[in-house]
Image 1: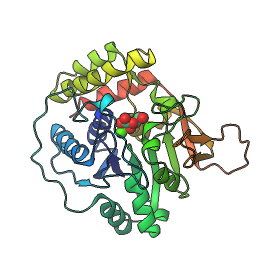
Image 2: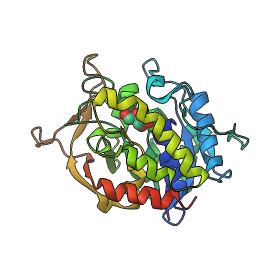
Image 3: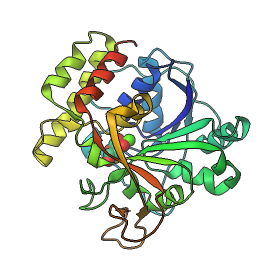
Image 4: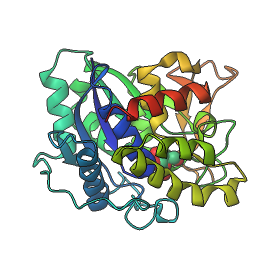
Amino acid sequence: ARQIIIDTDPGQDDAVAILLALACPDALEVLGITCVAGNVPLEMTTRNALIICELAGKANVLVHAGCDRPLGRDLVTAEHVHGRSGLDGPNLPAPIMPLQERHAVDFVIDTLRERPAKSVTLVPIGPLTNIATAFKSAPDIIGKVQEIVLMGGAHFAQGNVTPVAEFNIHVDPQAAEIVFGAGVPLVMVPLDVTHKALVTRARNAALRAIGTPVGRAVADLTGFFERYNPERYGEDGAPLHDPCTIAWLLKPELFKGRRVNVMIETQSELTMGMTVTDWWGNTGRPPNATFIHDIDTEGFFDLLIERLARL
Ligand code: BDR
Ligand code: CA
């Protein structure tokens, strides 16, 4: 199985990503979950990660709390999307499994140092503060990362926090700049693709029809999320952003990508956090990312439902 660390700020869609990964131990070994401030403050993203591991019946997963604020800016949260808890929707019990004592950044550093080079994949699905902090304080680990598969950014799809910036990148652009500039093989799953993974009413019903506690919780999670989106974007259901990263790891043939150069805007307040994507190769800068731009939506939801049913 491919060894991964999920770096996350749950978040309903983060929660579904975690569940999908934990449902596939044959393909993915989750070495740990590292939490970061993002959708809601750190205390709640950490609590939510624990809640989700317990829902999955995997109370042995190592969950770590990480950075509670971006590198150089005030934290911007998204309660208007995710609710006050970050996990509004289902009624899930308070977690009893333990939080690890080690800081998330130390866990990332230690894990990459201990394991063979190029054997660990990082899957950041929140702001990139933890990963950038690890790279800054332990540059020796950068060359040991197998791959980074992250949710973030936008090109043709435009932003979802500002006209040009996607939330995860916008919250901590300095961190994103470090990660995109690190020279690690990087796959980015931007809004261009996640806005094609919409939880329609029919798909929400199909998730509920799994008939298990996990299926019902995922239907409640995505149902809450859905309330927010249609009036804003006029779409039929909310984008299920973060699980697309896990689906890419499980079945890359569901996606199409393009090697491009991506730079992060960190200067202008107007375009802060924009992923400046050289789609046509205008700059001559070498590609540093595989930009995922298309998805087999039906295949994605079939995979999601089939795998979640295993929990
Ligand atoms: C990203 O921001 C968060 O709200 C979601 O969890 C996702 O990671 C989408 O822009
Ligand atoms: Ca997220």
